[in-house]
Length: 348
Image 1 (cartoon, rainbow, N blue to C red):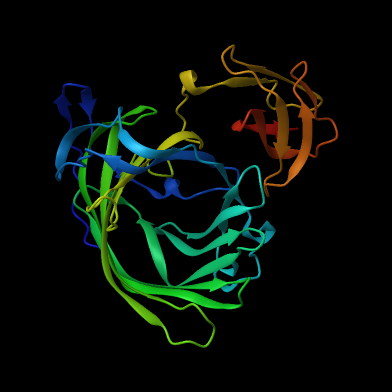
Image 2 (image 1 turned 30 degrees about the vertical axis):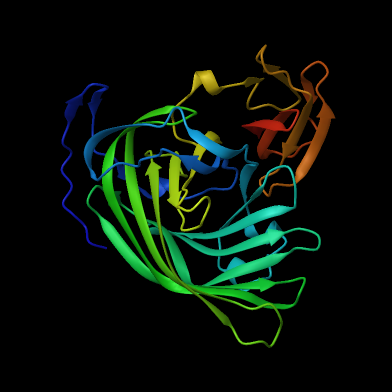
């Protein structure tokens, strides 16, 4: 890692007084963390801007197609997941899974004081289950990380189709990551006054095969560029722009994803985003849940630290009997339609 000497330089800009942000290993995931990513798979008229310090990015209004509302993701113990016996998953200490279902995407991370590494990916679905193992780890983040820092690595992955019984895809190449800008950013969900932008350039060679035993078909070399804005203490990018090389009307169309909601121990309370409250918390017998007038809960679900559902009931009077739950930390979620809001719940 090419480390610069960091001096905190305070500057005054139109939005106030800010410092150059530094990313530390408190960005490592922990069991019970949760978040939801929304976005556009195709966007137009988007400009991530150039490098530099003390910038102001405004992405509050996005022109795009294929808008999606993501599933809430939950961090759990890898041993509780469908791919627990796989090689990549065995070396992980955190797995990320869909909160409300066993089906969908799984990510497996190995965390340390100096880095966060993506070891494997899984897709669990009836009739379409696959597992991707990184033969060389994909280094997600290094710590500490400040403006001007950079690192790079070689990576290789192999995707195994569990349903078909053989490897179907293989990629290898070089990834370079540079912390090239910092400032404040407004996303479609929120404004963050102090963010660090990471620019990732991936040069990958790709192969594919349709039948077991056939030779690999070389698809070519692909160069993709992505930009991720991180706020200190928030464990996933608050906004990402990915410039993929694919044709749609004869040109490149980037994708934009943004952090819609999260539950991380950041020490920062966001009152406007607090759609429901829990009292008492910690609790031992009964819990009272109150949601805002504009968002009424229909169902209450409680998960343990492994992401397993331990209680579910209709939200009639907002009261939940938790006296049968063991002492410990839980995730409590309230659902309205296809949206789930979650909080941590302590049982003592």
